[in-house]
Length: 69
View (cartoon, rainbow, N blue to C red):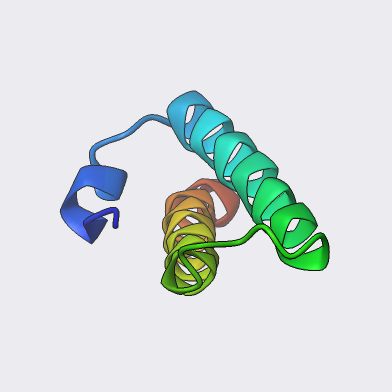
């Protein structure tokens, strides 16, 4: 599980990379679930929430930049 304080310290590029990695893991977990190989079902929920955390911080960082224009 990713802590929000860890996510906030990352740059925009790092956040984008983190989001890409989380989405790949989410895809793999969905694939495992479909094939009946998923062992840690709680991980699906953790990944979904981590994705939400990253997207939230991205939006927060983008808001001041949009206001400055």
